[in-house]
Length: 254
Image 1 (cartoon, rainbow, N blue to C red):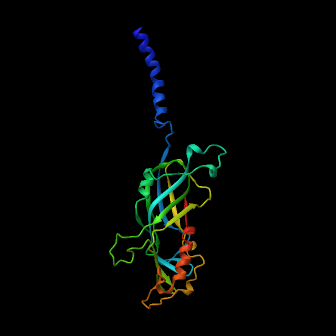
Image 2: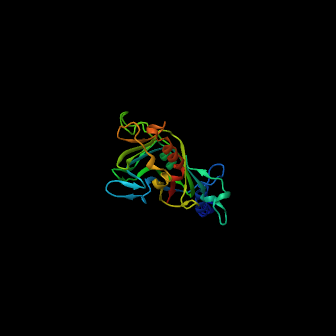
Image 3: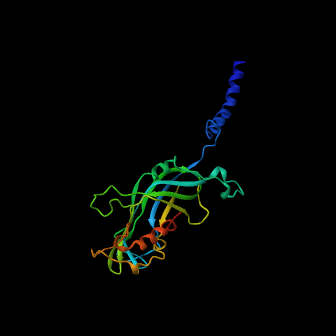
């Protein structure tokens, strides 16, 4: 009898292991555990802008420096487990990856250099494991840079651009920490089902769309055309026009 029991135990052991493996794919309340992939979220200025002689030409402005601060990044997706055959992603409640490794990394305040000395740069906003699924939008807040000396031009600015308009040094900046939303360029979202990179593109052509730089002035005569808050240099209308373009100038791609 004892030998028979041992034989039965040996036969049943693989089934017990298999059951244990299946059980490990669910939480205590029976909710399926999401599969994950390692993803890096990177940012750059859209490389379709023309670069020549240590500057990036975007219409009437030549850009040599571009920096943007990000924080509280939240990536929304339709979980892979919910995307069955024939399921319309528009009918799925989107999840957030805030508690994932990538979400924790990306939400930290960062100052991202996207153009330096007229050359495109790549910044890593965050990286780590994140649930598999179809990612459709990324929201984030601008972040004021307080990690430089107070007399540095970047101090207290959440986004700034340095360049030239009509051969006059030009500075554009924001100091607000407002929310922006980037949607998927393809309009449908991008599938994550394996290690990958996602890119936040800041499209400078879109950012300056409809902005009449011929009206830009150096009203205080300090040698700089300043386009910033509080109608500095009398360029408040230009600042407002650029602000109106910010949301539409940011998108993400895979």
